[in-house]
Image 1 (spheres, rainbow, N blue to C red):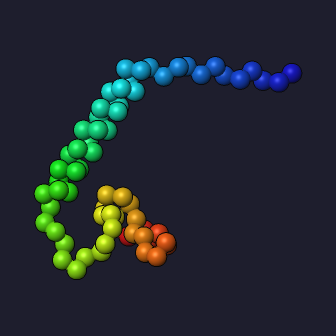
Image 2: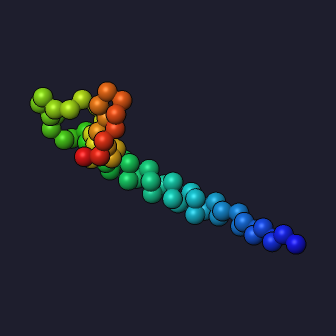
Length: 64
């Protein structure tokens, strides 16, 4: 006889809403710091790897 599949509990919408609000607040904080940071001279083009996690050069991603 096959084992019964566990029933999944429906996520609480209040918890999901709170998590999305917290994520939005963190993103706004990061964006505010990024906007006020001095511009880099002769630096790497593209997204900041400290924020996005890796460098990308000619389609090859590498950890920094």
